[in-house]
Length: 241
Ligand code: ADP
Ligand code: 5GP
Image 1 (tube, rainbow, N blue to C red):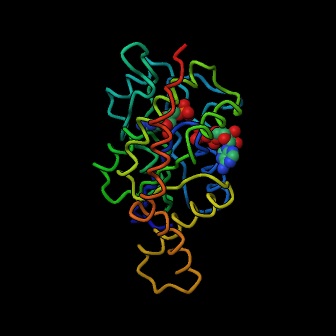
Image 2: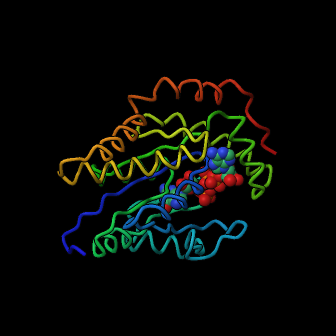
Image 3: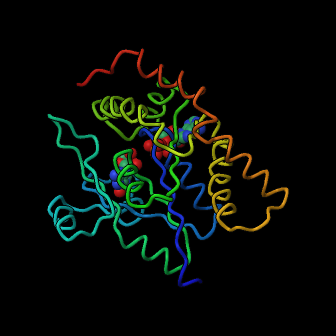
């Protein structure tokens, strides 16, 4: 344990249904000394979600009190618009403090608005955007997850298009087509950042890890992202009912 450890903050964002939680769960099992920041939210638990595990589920009044008490590093109202109020989601400051005390790094699973707030405050945070291979696949994954009503799925698809337009603000882009490959690449990104910041001479295996991570850097994937973006632009917007 190092009392002076400055955690590397990894931000991971994705349109809902892209497979981010699946990838994050796998990552946390396979990579050590990486803490997960359990966000606070006012949305209701889904499926088998448990309070304090995936999220801290709190009433709106409690969340608004936490905002007034400046307990959040960032917070956002997600899936809201002029008609629907949406739900609050926020990252508590204490997770960053605690990761530092334990000598660990910290993983934030947050939306595009939250990611940009964090990048302004913590400029050396590493941001990763997970994309589905195309819109049809995203719609299929949302339906087959079987946790959301049709109206919620429709809203998530509209939000997805808006979110994907922001892909170029991220350091790394991970197109989640084959799960095993995506999982390996996500691990490589985390390890590569650690290796490069360690200042140590890299072994040949470590260099391969850095190479795999680099394949997912924004500049190296732009060409592959454009058709994905187009698939969201050309298909008709889903019904809102
Ligand atoms: P998110 O956290 O981004 O909302 P989930 O991790 O809940 O998404 O994944 C949405 C659904 O897609 C889940 O049913 C999950 O099992 C499935 N899924 C995730 N990644 C893949 C993949 N690469 N190929 C096929 N299905 C996937
Ligand atoms: P879900 O309801 O599907 O779990 O998450 C909805 C969205 O909220 C996802 O894009 C997720 O990344 C985002 N989210 C989860 N926690 C936070 C948070 O603490 N802050 C912000 N800004 N977004 C969050």
